[in-house]
Structure formats: structure tokens, C-alpha cells
Amino acid sequence: MKNRKFFLGLIALVVALFTVGMACADSISIALPNDATNEGRALLLLQARGVIKLREDAGITATVADITENPLGITFNEVEAAMVPNVLADADFGIINGNYALAAELPAALLYENAESPYVNVVSVKEENKDTDLAKALTAAVMSQEVVDYFAGYTGTAISVVENPTNGYDDTVDYAALAGTTVKVACTLDPHSYVLEKAKTILAAKDITLEIIVVDDYVTPNTMVDSGDVFANFFAHQPYQDDFNAQNGTSLVTIAGVHVEPMGLYAGKTADLKVLGIE
Image (tube, rainbow, N blue to C red):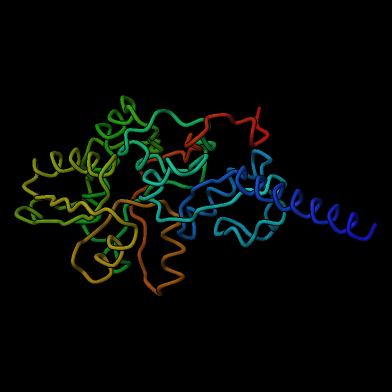
């Protein structure tokens, strides 16, 4: 009888371990950005859909450590924002910034965050340069009607937020004094570099050369501005810039809010939102 109980107990243990193993194998995985504001943004997207719940005070810089409820037992793969499309094949889903999704030529997202968000992509300069004629000229160029029209015909998921577009120029700027000037701007590829190409043409008409320096990460553009290697950058949204300043003691300020890129949840190994409880 003792041996029979022992074997029954052993069988129950094996079944339990097998069940746990199968549960782990079947757990849902989501890849998402690991930088402070984009990770929080991704998690807030999931919370808005009722998939998880975060601490009430977590805010836009939330991390997976702030998750208080995860009823589906989702595992999160945190990687650099630009790398999420690269790991999508190994995850069930990925939450990706619009510019990186477009660069990776991904199909449309399964769902997007609300486009009316605080995540406006901005042009930033050092605080000491914000009121210069060069800053004003750059601002007028990127907030021009030509740029607004560009977004109206844009094939990705980016929306202009410019309510009062300019003709490309600022009447208070002494363009004659800026003639022959070169302004360097660091940016990411799409749509930021394409917007700057529009601005480049506008500024060229005033004999101002816009040199566009494309990078592929979320740190270099800010360190380049802070060090003075470039005059401005255009790659990130306002919450990211605010957090960067707080974490690094920098004084980067916004001279133009240009567009929003709704973050989306993209299909990886599955496209079935029902596994997340989303109908």
C-alpha cells in the first residue's frame, strides 16, 4: 500500500511538472522597447486594453517591475526600440514605434495607441540656442505647409500636429545675416530625415545649408547636441527628451513639435488578439 501511494504521488508530481512546463511553453511573449519612456508607453497601451495593470503612480516611465496584475502570465522581452522588429519572429507580439515599423516594412499593426497623445516628435536644441535666428529659421522650415502636406500623403503611421503652418520662413529672422551658414541636425531615418529634406530645400532658398546626419539609436542625437557636434536633433518625442534631461543633467529644449507616430502592437508568431483577451 505504501509503495502504491508512493507511485501515485510520483505520477501526480510528474503530471504537475509536465503541466507547469506546458504552461511555460505556451506563455505569451511580447517584445517591447527598453528605454524609459517607450517602455512605459508600450505598457500603457496594454493597460488601456485591459491586458495588464500598472501601479497607479507608474506614469509614462513605467517598467515591467511596475506591473501589478498580469493575469495571462505574459513574459516581456525588453530590447532597444530599434531592435524590436528584429526579434518579432521570436515573440508572439511586439510593440513598436511607427518609424521602426515602417523601416522594417512591417504590415499594419493589429492595434494602435490613440494618436491624440503627448508623444509629439520634437526638434531639440541646447537651451542657450533656442532663441537664436538659426533656431527660428529651422523651426519655421519644419513647421511649414510643405511639411504638413508631406504628412497628409504619408504612407506610414505619422500625423502632423502643426496647427498653424508657416510658409517656411519667419519674418522676424534676418536671413541675409544667416546666408552661407551651415546647420547640422542629427535625426533618425523615417520620417524624420524626410521632413528635414523638405526643410533643407526651404532653407537653401535663403542660402542656408542644412546638413542632415542620420543615426540609428536613441542616445547619440542628444549627446551630439549637448556636445555641440550638431545644432539640433529630430528623432524623439517630448516625454523621452524630458526624461533624458532628468537622467543626464542636460538642458535640451524643444523649438518645434512636428508630428506623432502612434505606437502599435504588431503580430509576431501570432496575429490572434483573442489570446490577449482583446476582441
